Image (cartoon, rainbow, N blue to C red):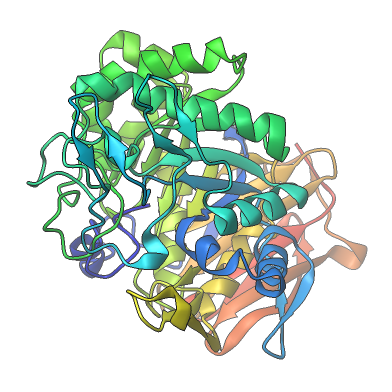
Length: 503
């Protein structure tokens, strides 16, 4: 969650500015959906909680509102507007690294956390406050109440969850600063605290299972560990920790040990949440075979924009190693959502993840946000925040994907980077999502490779459109002789649902 959240912080900001080189979406006259080629079972759409959940999770009115907006498919009223719930099913919980107590270190020093320039809404409180003078850990299970409240709401609405850390707890770091080391690309977790970091994450996962009713499906101990942003001079300060692949190799076996020793043997380990596809390739190749064997799923972030060898990462991770693969975080600096749609479709075309998460649907920067809020004083939480009345088109573009491609569907081949298809074999429902980066045109979807493709009554095919002044507007098309043709304007995203489809 880190190259994304602020325009200054974006690992991928420069990359996004040069958007759409390879893989540019464009109108083709005919797109063939091929059920003979499939790319796994879809697990879900999601978001990281972290900052927006800290801001709004402690206010029951807003917490329930945003939990319904993001984690249900109900129609929800926001500022007088009726919005379609996004139906997200993956909630990534940010294990905080901040604490405000005095700690006595093993060398006898008494220290306090240096928060650097991290604003209050990005300071996430951790649970393990003190290593303990006698080796007995000191925990505060009341820490981070707002983000935890949002996690519980997401869980109650059916979301699966992942536990991830931007940084080890501040007192575990060499700099005693959760925003990073004293220099760029300097390891900030020493060997003395490899097990501390692993043990802390496993302890929180167990406590969540036993006390919160939250069973984390996976634990991710790193976040963009190869990024040069994580140092105390970084302008867009937030929690982060640089860790080389060699450090990661030291942590991973200890994390597996700590999880297993607590009976969390089915809790998966994901890694390494690198900021870009190409960095993820480098890190995966640098990890030794024993470390790779401990990783159940590779997480990668989408801050390389249109760049990155998505197909190669899929080959290495899924085809060769048999691991899972998610795009666990993406954010884009374009409020209309069309950039997001193109990058997302590129992912589905070549990366073939089975899960995909947007970083922050509520964000302080308008272009990154689906709904913007403003922190009135970064140094003073008592001055609160101001919510925008405006819902960016990006929200409705997300709905085009997340409300229709649902967990359990099989991802199918379309042969083009601007259209994705998913089939619910049990109900016979085929979903197609397409983005048009060319001029207004007609697009035809050829379904002739299916045994049947009848549509609804009289061949009816509902379709939804976002773009050119329309926000998730429902229209209709018709399937005739296993073909569906739609008109689509430039910079529009459309979703079709074809019933009566069988392989």
